[in-house]
Length: 164
Image 1: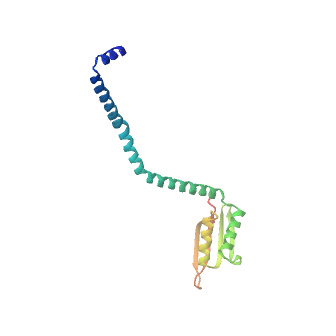
Image 2: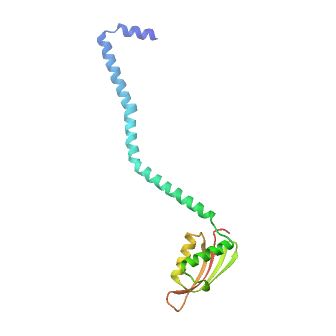
């Protein structure tokens, strides 16, 4: 087969060989453009168009990974028993509640009852915010009674440490 092709090539005139060579080169260039360059160019345009969305997705996934790590860390730091009582007491001190007006009773390892006699409502909301965001202690139930003095309340609440 190789010999037949070589003998056919040899019998062609130099002008015909040049024409076939140029035609083959042009055909090879057209095929390279049609099957390589043009699809790669179109794919590059699509990739550039999708790049901002991919970057936004990457940033979102990184933020979610950080949030998951923070939540995983908070889940491990769940106080129970005396540590739960101590965490509530510390948050109360930080919220500015007077220890004389507060009674904390452990109901079980993961729940505590809180009774607060006259206290400022703002101090109560500060306490709940601190317990839920910093101490991983959630409010399970609550009864708030307004007192005659403006902004003052009496609170009975049950706090849980996230486990049952």
